[in-house]
Amino acid sequence: MNLKNIQSALRNRNIDGWLFYDFHNRDQIAYRILGLDSTKLATRRWFYFIPSKGEPKKLVHTVEKFKLDPLPGKKYVYLAWEEQHKLLRKILGRSKKIAMQYSPKNNIPYISIVDAGLYELIRSFGYKIVSSADLVSEFEAFIDEKGYELHIKAGKKIEKIKNEAFDLIGRSVRENLNLKEYDIQQFILKRFAEEGLVTHDAPIVGVNEHPADPHFEPTLENSRVFKKGDTVLIDLWAKLNVPNGIYYDITWVGYIGDKPPAEYEKIFNIVKQARDAAVNFVIERFAKKKICYGWEVDEVCRNVIKKAGYGRYFIHRTGHSIGSEVHGNGANIDNLETKDERQLMPGACFSIEPGIYLEGKMAVRSEINMFIKHNGEPVVTGEIQKEIVLIK
Image (cartoon, rainbow, N blue to C red; front, side):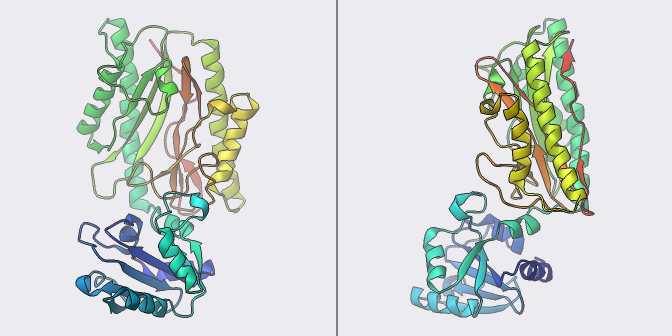
């Protein structure tokens, strides 16, 4: 935990303090930001208050009075709930505006951790509660130079494996190997292990209408053999199997043959234009030193697809935060599922992945990763698909 930086961030936002709270290890964000071990018992409620100025304060139950000892600040110990309420008011002191892991109207569910009862309790003391969403982005989703390097290294390996997967599909068709979607998925997982990559979930490999379900999962039972004339989508994500590895997450599409169907080419070009519009918007915003919100990027991207007449076929957000988990706790590129009002900040990594999903027919998604370098320069961190991969 970097106390000095947290307090500086609070002052910059005119917030009087940040109140952390946990019960039974529910708030993993708090554990990561504060540098606590979340594997240890937390059977009693604890509170940790970082004021914008001055010494932090901790409030723990007498049964677990040593729970917050690794953290700086004065310790208060309670036994009964009445004493807890009294001491909680004392540690919050004269503050007026307090940040907590709360999101108005549950707009950002990743941050909506504080329960309604605690919200009501703090409000009853006379304090105004604001969302810690941007603070979490700054201190939880921030990726340092080492993390960025690990992301790039993972990306180079994943791009290579993606190319190998498309090549193997072509070989299967040429040599009548009768490989299925599931076989290519397992090939990718095998190559991940060989390259020192890990992932929590298996990649998506689908043909024709299968990827019209954005989270299609190939199995032995539902998989199809690749054949000439198939459209193909491969979505793969992984990170280096090292401490603090950062995920790389991409989606590419291809066609087995020489000439893709006209409709497939059409929706690919629309998706490509939407993706590029989002990327350019982020670059232009930072070049002008203007704040860039996740919802705004989604809006720019989505409008391209809407104007082309396919708005109702773009059925998910434009992108998500990326970190040591493939879906991180920073700003998402979203004005559909939620209105993500968090800022994109230096040190943030996220995907741009518009798609068009024609149920029962075909689907296109094009996914790239962006990183806001620490000097404020947004960059795409890997290859950008410009044409449909022709699998021969």
